[in-house]
Length: 320
Image (cartoon, rainbow, N blue to C red; front, side, top):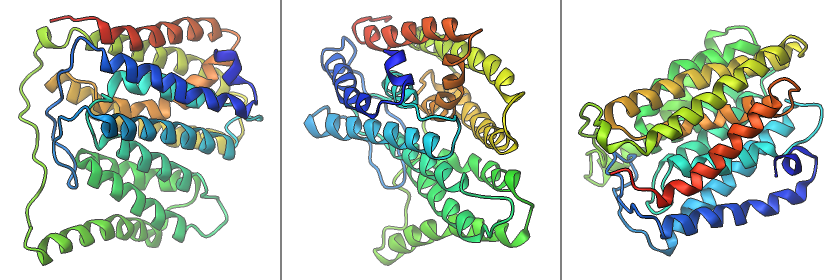
């Protein structure tokens, strides 16, 4: 299956809905139907419905995000040929972390982070970047509205804007202005309609309860094994890459650092990996180079298939 997606065959994208359908079936017949009581975004209320529209919206978002993430990879020349393995990585790993039977703003945050990357990668050394950084600020602001904990990303996004091109104060303020506009409109809406209150609250975090998170540990272990394999192959790849590709990888590495901090901290405090799913976005790019590496390709294949197997089997295993 991996070889099919590594080739330049657009038709393999037609397999993605069937793969997502398997996860929907697994979720429906899951032995653990517990819903996560998390702090949702400003526009979202907690929901515990597992009806048709919940499954459809969550599945559609995963499919859309996978295709968009793959399109960004191909359009910005991370490889000298098109490949569709990124979409497979995202579709296989995301349902492991994000429940399909509960409407969640996390996948909306995925979408806007991917869209932000698409915009930022258009920055060039010798072209005007004012409109680009402004648009990037607007998009990441929507991600923050969907998931307020992504406020941590603001300094990282500002640094990402200056990795490819020189630092300019004007562009810095334009990016911050872009971030502020959606939030200003949102708070204005609350004020005008006498609803000036948050629709979300910070979760009632308690320190990690180990007995309630046994099913999460294999996911975390597989995730970090794939990360180590990816970093090993990525280091070798960067030695012979173009300067622009190196800078793009640096930007992804910076984003990954922020997302892994958010996800790891949340896992330590709450025992869930929902927010760690955000780190799948840059990881899918890193892992692609591992599949193409002669040294680490076999290991990457083995552990990815193990991840795919566990991502489905976990629905039928109860650790509590």
